[in-house]
Amino acid sequence: MGSTKVAIKMDMQLSEVIRYLEDIIAGLRDGKVVVQKGEQVAALTPSEPVAIEIAAKLKESKQKLAIEMTWMPAAEAAEAKELHITSQEPEPRELDPHGTAEA
Image (cartoon, rainbow, N blue to C red; front, side, top):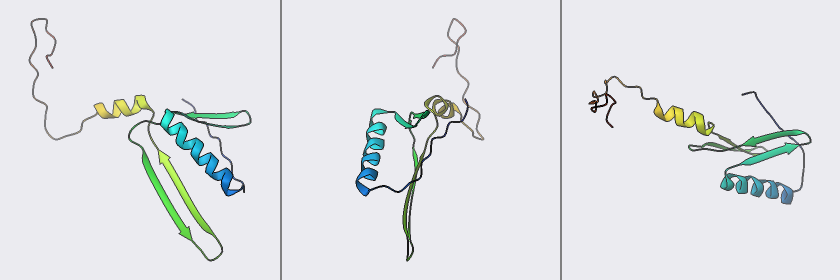
């Protein structure tokens, strides 16, 4: 899968910022956040777990709040859950009469 990035940096009224944040929250609740700027579109489908980083910075002349969320696509998250690394070998599974492993 290729990389897609949609970015914007501009000054706007606080009420507009709040509206964008509310749209992001609604998208997170719906399971899809679509960001579009002109013809550029990034459709994000959040999955568990979500890593979040929040940073606040105060200077004399400027204040900053940064929020970053990251997650793996659902398919990759499922694959990661199947990966186990340990120093112990798993217990051997018994085979049923058809030669397949029993759960």
